[in-house]
Image (tube, rainbow, N blue to C red; front, top):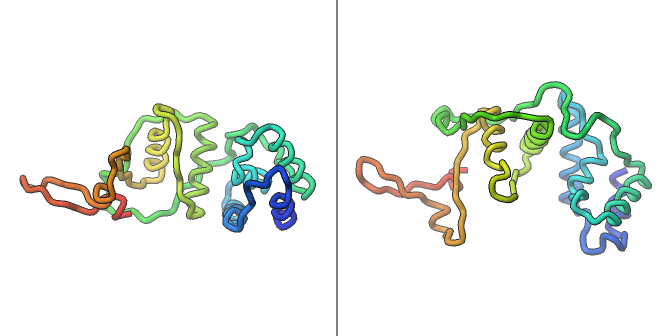
Length: 193
């Protein structure tokens, strides 16, 4: 079905400015393989394609055309429970931890709900597939809070970098530290990563 969908999407006049690229196809296939090999309920091809193409941000007409294209290729939405709910336990990421970084693991109080559980499940799945995670949103919407909970749950260290309009390359690559009253420059968390 994916092989049928991609050329139809790329040739449709409604989506002339965008394409379903090879990178997006590989991301969908990698996610399908990872979800089918895990103990969790696998994510449907329909939801993977919709998420990859950011269909929830499309205008209504484009969204309905995308859904009809998916249906014409035999890709239908799953009819599972409400959005955001997860059956079974939440998976953990597999990542080696340096014992010296134990103090960098966040310890926060966090109240979870169905939406957060779904979001954390999606984050874990993407992280285990090797994808990078990027949060973009307005100030005060909980981006740091959910990230800290994700890191705490998976026992992963957190490195913090503040970006602003005056950020320079040297400030991203090295950070000043005071050790025994002497200022020394160390590699920044970005370089260490």
